[in-house]
Structure formats: structure tokens, C-alpha cells
Image (cartoon, rainbow, N blue to C red; front, top):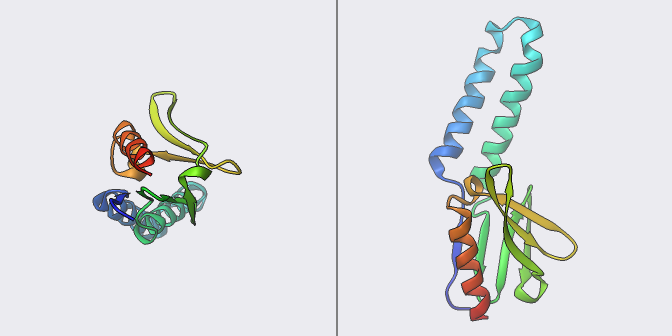
Length: 131
């Protein structure tokens, strides 16, 4: 198998999401009913993202045999032959890592990877060449 690399969100970020989501839920009794329309969905979304970031770690693992990536809440394994393209794209000003697996496209942010996209892309290309 050889060298393996992993990427995952920073633990303080995931814990921060969890804390803010819990804080918003705790604040619900203080918010008037119309405000629940904004506060409740925001709290639930933060708690869901925090749970995903804490439970589905690492987000991306790569070795000379291929890669394993979490897309949404699904973990997929692909050999390098199945990876059609790796590239950095920009959504306005945000760099994104795009992994084309043929039948699906996985897009990851630097925040989810816990590292700059260009660094992750360089490491993936290096592992791909080592296969």
C-alpha cells in the first residue's frame, strides 16, 4: 500500500459549529415565534454539519492505490483508474477541489479538507503518479 495521506476539517472548527448550533437551540425560548423561522433551521444545519465533520473523519484519504472520499454522508473508494480528473476550481473567490469519478463529481472546500486546496491537489497528483 505505501504512503497514505488524510485530510479532515480542523477539530476547533467542528466543535465551534457544534457550540454555536447548541447555543442557538438554547436561545430559542428567548426568540419570538417569527424568529424561529430563522434560528431553528440555522441551529439544525450547524448541528448537522458539526456532526458530519466530527463523525465522518477523515474527509479524504489517498494512497498509491487510490482514494477514499466523503461526499455528503457517503464514503466512496475509487482506484486511480476510476479518477478521471483532479483540479482546482474557483467559486467566486473560494478555491475548491474537484474530483471527477466518472459517474459522480465530488467538490471539497479548503475548510472541509483542513488544508489549502492547492496543497491537497499537489499531494494527490504525487500519490497518483506513484501508483
